[in-house]
Length: 496
Image (cartoon, rainbow, N blue to C red; front, side, top):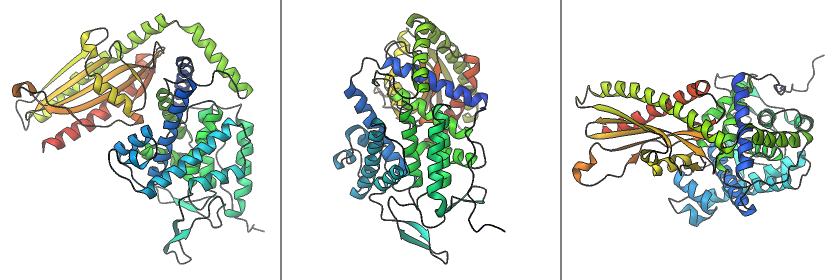
C-alpha cells in the first residue's frame, strides 16, 4: 500500500574520493592556513577583532545582494565595511535607504550571534537555527508566494518557524526540485546536525562546509531566507574548524548558483572548489592579524594544527622560501610575457583594420630592479579588490602589454606579488587594466588612467613557494585570457 507521506529527497553522502583538481584546491587552503597562522603571530587581539568585524560586515551586505533583496553600489559597500553600518558611512559614496541599512544590520546581528555561539562552544541545535533565521529576517515581514490558484501574492513571513507549506525550485533545465515536505523538516534538521557532529573529525572543513550547506538547502526548512541562513551556517562550520569566514559575494553569485545546481544532481565538487577558492581569499585578507595562539578543538583539529606548524618549521627557512618564490615568480612572469607578446600582436592586427597606426608593445620587470616598483597604486588597488595585503616593499614581478589605437592606450598588466608580511611563501597573481591617452607627454600633462575592470575573488590565483609553474600555468593563462578579453571589450566600448 503506497504511503501518504511525501518522499524526502536524499542528499548525497559526504564525498570521500575527490578528483585531483579538488584535492589540489584543499591543499592550497591548508598551506594558506599554515601561513595565515604563522604570519599573524605578532598582531594584537584588537587587530584580529577589527579584521573579523570587517569580514562579517561584508558577509552581511553581500548575502542580501545575492538574494536580490537590495542593491548597494561597490563604493558604498566598501565604505560600510570600513566604517561601520551607519547612514554616515552609507552616504560617503552614495546613499541607501534606512530600510536597506536596517536589513543589513539584522543580518549582521545574526552573524555576531553566531560567532558568539561558536566562541562559547555551545551545541548546534534546531532551536539555534531558528534563532538565526529570526535574527536574519527581523526586518522582513513578507515574502513572494502563490495562492491556491497559483497567483503571486505577498505572504506573511513567519520568523524562526519551520515552513507550513511545501516549497520547490525550478532548475536551469526547467525541471522542478521539491524540497523536504514541512512535516519532515524537524527530523531532517536533527539528522543533518547529527551527521555533522559525527563527521567533524573525519573530513576536511571545506568539504564538510559544502556538504552541510547543500544539505541544508535541500531541506529548505523556512518559508523564505533559507539561502541567507545556509550561508551563515557555512560561516559557523568554518569558525568551528578554526578557519576564516568566507564570503559569497555578488561577483561569485553565478558560480555559486551553478555549483549548487551541480550538487543537486550529485556532484558536490564544484561547490567544494568554490568554497576552497573563497576560503583562500578569506585567509589572505586576514594575513595581518593574529588568531588565538592556543590550539583548541577536536583531536583532529589539534593534530592537524600541530602537524602544520611542525611542517612549516621543518620544510623551509625564510631564505629558502625567498629563493623558491623568486624562481617560481620569474618562470610564471616569463610565461605571461610570452603570452602577452603573442596575444598583443593579434590584438594589434585586429585593430589595424580601423587604425593603421595601431601597435603593441610588451615590457616586464622583476625585483629588485627599479622598474619592479612601478604601478604600486594599481597593484594595491587590485589587491584590495580581492581582499588581501600586497607585500611589494621590494617590488613585484610584472609583465605589461600596451595597445596604442585611435590615439588611446590600453594598458594591461599581469602582476605577481608576495602576500603578507615577511617570507610567507605565498604569491598572488592579479591583473589590472586601464585606459589613457596614447601619448600623454605630448600635452605636457600626465592623464589619470581610467580603470577598465574591477576584480572579483575569482580573478586572483594563489601560488605556494613549493608549486610547479608547469602545474599552475593553465590556471594563470586562463586568468590572463579571461581578464584581457574583458579589458579589450571595455577599452573598445570606450572608443565608440
